Image (cartoon, rainbow, N blue to C red; front, side, top):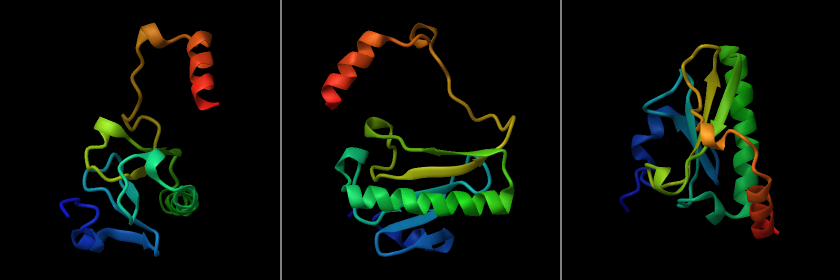
Amino acid sequence: MSCLFCNREKLKPTVVYEDETVLAFMDIDPINEGHILLIPKEHYVDLDEIPDEILTHLMFVSKKIVAALKKLYAPDGYSIMQNGGEFNDVGHYHLHIFPRYKGDGFGWTYREDFARVNFEIAERIKEVID
């Protein structure tokens, strides 16, 4: 298999957590020191493919990681994020967890034309979810 995260031998030296379901290891291109990637061991690309019990476990483990990062780094905060579809540059679901600091340079960019809440769009999305 060509998936880097499914061929985990190269990741082993930086593993910070492992159990039968998930693996957490250091990001090779960290936003801040302590940047960790958390993955399911089974291959999934997108969030909506992952069984609920694995998603629940990912969140449980992310909570442990956040607690460890807070204890070790005493950051101003933390971020947890995941990119899907074309923006998942690895091709295996992975959750970024990293400490944040005021002025660390990480941030979101906003488009002016999307700056206001659009109630019509909210209603359309709600209908699809329901």
